[in-house]
Amino acid sequence: MNEAQLVEAQEELRIFKELVATEGWQRLVEIMQTQNAGREQKLREPLPNIFALPEAEYIKGELSGAMNVLLLPARIIEQAEVVIAEIKHKREIEEEYNDAGRNYPGDEGRAP
Image (cartoon, rainbow, N blue to C red; front, top):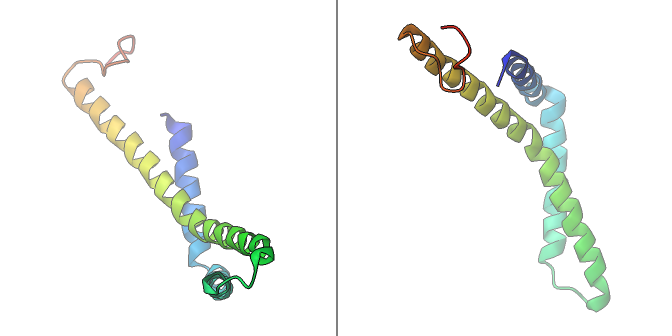
C-alpha cells in the first residue's frame, strides 16, 4: 500500500464521517427506519393467499436495499480505518527494519 492509497482512504474516511454527522443524513436515517418498520410489519402478517407472495418478496427486497443504504457509510468508514491502520503499521515495521540497518522483506533493492 502506498501514499496514494493512504490519501484516498483518509479522504473517504473524512467524507463519510462528515456525511453521517449531517442533519440531513440523520433525518434520512429516521425516515428510512420509519419506512422499514412499516415494511417489517407487513412481512410479519400472514399472507392472505399464495398470490401475495410476490408482493412479500418485493417488500423483502425493499427492506434489504434500504438497510444496505443505511449501513453503507459505516462500512466505508470501517474499511478506510482498516486501510489506514494497515498502512501505518507497515510503515512502523519498515522504520524498525530501517533503523536496524536491514531492509524490510520485499524491499531488498531499496536502500535503508
